[in-house]
Amino acid sequence: MPCDGLGNDITQGTPPAPAPPPLEGWFPLCDEQAFELADLLFRCTQMLAAQINDLLILWAHHDGMADQGAPFTNHTDMYRAIDTIPLGEVAWQSFSITYSEVPASNPPPWMVQNYDIWFHDPRALVLNQLANPDFKGKMDYAPRKVTNSSGQHEWSDFMTGNWSWDQAVMLSTLQCSFFFTDRFRRPLLQLIQKRMGPCLSPLCSEVTRQWCL
Image (cartoon, rainbow, N blue to C red):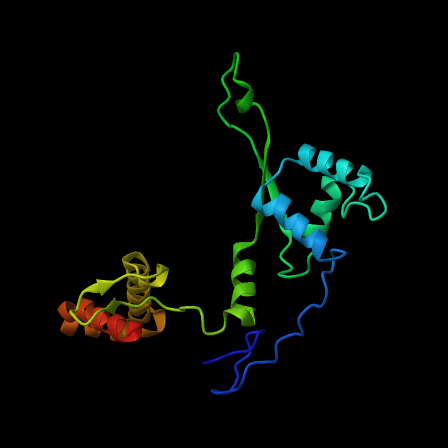
């Protein structure tokens, strides 16, 4: 049964809600130049923060660029602008870890340090991807097996691989097993197991195969 973004059931064939209007301009960055610079330094070259600061200082004091000024004052200013980009709206989260078995004497420095782990909520990221209209018609929601005219298996992406297929078959088999072990159907299960026990496993496999076609 299809549902809306809040999980409410909707009628089969109901068109999706209209997508929000696209953002205009380069907000929260001041212009395209600032966007391209942030993309170059942060993503492409992954420049160190100290080197970003040096570059922006040189930029700000260059004779031909002094009037216009650098797009950012320092690396912190650039990072803040990147983090405030509204696309996605998945906040950063963090936690700290330390080594739990530090020797009593002369431990190496890395054993006594705290390490910060930063991450995005994976579930929120996936939900944003599913809600992104740019991916419409470009995602495989279930694994599939692809064969050529000779019947040979062909692989082209993650969802055509054996691992994805095996996980779906295993999950479907578990769902089938849960159906037959639900507490409301235990009397029926006892009868089925007595009469058809040897057939249950092939039955689940066939149901799984049909679901994945």
